[in-house]
Length: 193
Image 1 (cartoon, one colour):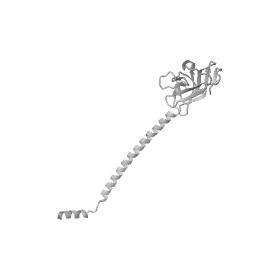
Image 2: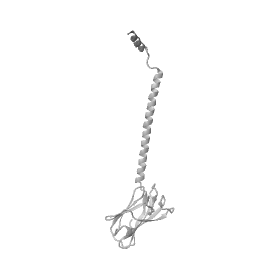
Image 3: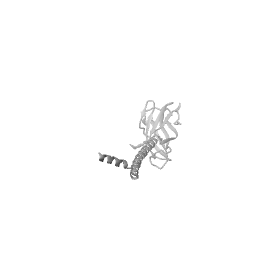
Image 4: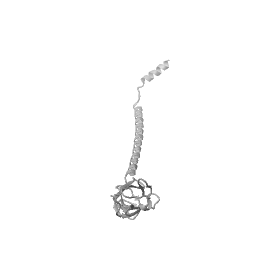
């Protein structure tokens, strides 16, 4: 018992934690907090980068890549529309579009839609009005597209007839051209504005 009492007295005489022990504990807290802060910041930066990528991908998809330049000109045989001609240029910030209709992949596709007919891949020809001579529609270039309607769609576009052309580039949004023919198709060239 005497030994136990000596031990208790000795414990009571200790003065507490020294300055060195306190510094070690504080440094440990600072290191743990720094590691935690690094993990939180890294996760935040990673997630914000992924968010930025998603926004840019969405903009690329929704941004129109082509614009109609001028009117849509219809060729007629006096009773129905036989061909359509229109000009295309790239919209501001649009990506280059392959207008070579003979390519099997990565090209613009033209679909025709009306009340009775849907043709998903119309054959078209392009003439470069302003450009560098290749089949790509690039910034600052102007191309004219001609579609022979009589030869391929199986439709009869006559007076007061509504039809839609959907120009689908490989990337970006569609360009939709919807027109109504006039009440009389007795001229050979008609501007469908």
